[in-house]
Image (tube, rainbow, N blue to C red; front, side, top):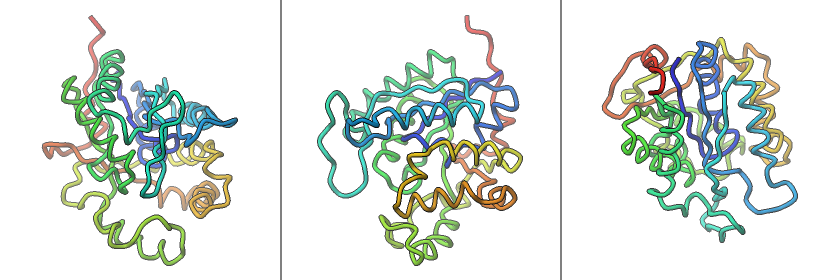
Length: 263
């Protein structure tokens, strides 16, 4: 049994970027730990902790064995970075070496064989996602754990970006920005077929009620995904992509080494 640590920025990212891969790894008998940098809360308030509870419910559906929060707060969207909430540091403001030390401790403590992180753009440029890439790369260097980075094909982003902008389902991005998101197809090293795990992926996404219950456009997009018939969801969300520094290619799942017993 191998141990995989899936490192993400916020609750819900674990489903959107790697949910099928987590479910597939768990179904194959591997142990998956989800490490999340941020709790998803912008401010301390009566709902603080709710998104971490939603993450726990999502992780259980996907088959993950454990959830770890590194202790940081969500940095939010927009040009301004708010002050830190009491007792927490916004992840975009976190010291990379300090955060990498926390993640490295998780990797070492869990005897991790593989780290799932993000590409240099953080997928779509969110500052917390970019920080995940920086922290993940540093933690991998500190521990020697193999790392692969979740991404999306840049060509797909360009093809879908304009219709989503025209439908106003995306409002925080411009098409010029989106042209640089993701990774060119030619540089993607691992394409994981997760169609057989579409049902738990969709069910896990639905557990993120905070994200699906709002009135904004992103909430409507989340709700639309969770309400898709399973065959349609399987088509849209049935592939997940990764790049591996160094260009190593092949099947991600079959390349996970089997761990030796600790000690």
